[in-house]
Image 1 (cartoon, one colour):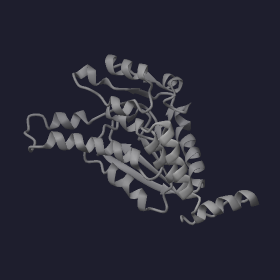
Image 2 (spheres, rainbow, N blue to C red):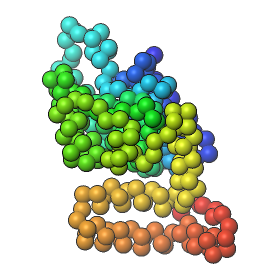
Image 3 (tube, rainbow, N blue to C red):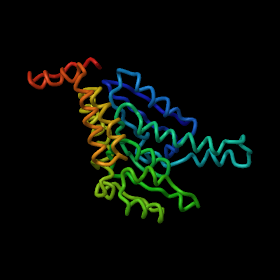
Image 4 (tube, rainbow, N blue to C red):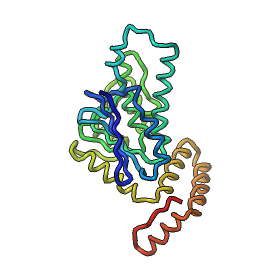
Length: 257
């Protein structure tokens, strides 16, 4: 049975995509609702997105479900609704109030590649692969999302050939920050998550939202926006607490205001 599993502990949420055998994306997944809920949860400061098992992170759309439904006539508007749902799933990752770490445990292909690319940063297992194989079946892939993490040459090569990029190539391209043995993947992701969870929650959230804004802004206006945001942040109680804790060489106590 296709499921999304959510576990929360120590301010870290872990979402696991579980749809054997390759964790294909199910259009019924409530990923958007899960991610949106973090904006209103004080117990979540960072999220890890991964796939069940070691074979695949997410190997794209659920082809088996499509095959089962072949020959049936879907209600009018189904195609557009499905496309819109996919877009919003990617947007929900980018717009999530807390950082999302992608723990890439295997193949990230097609829609799975797009999901990975919409995370804030990626840690990959040695057996991870990335690609947009849609050209092999007469379709187009999610190049817009893939371009968030892969440079133009790799992006065009993967789209035009349908071939996969392995973990070491992804590291060389700067798409992932680290490649580790499969058995160490979640430990590495959790270590990074704990670092983020220890930081000022309001500050981390503002870092993410600010980066999202300036990503498509010129340097002059982007830096002006950063200055405006840091001025706002500096007036919070937690900002003052961060400075006191640093001066007193102790752990800060965050109040979320």
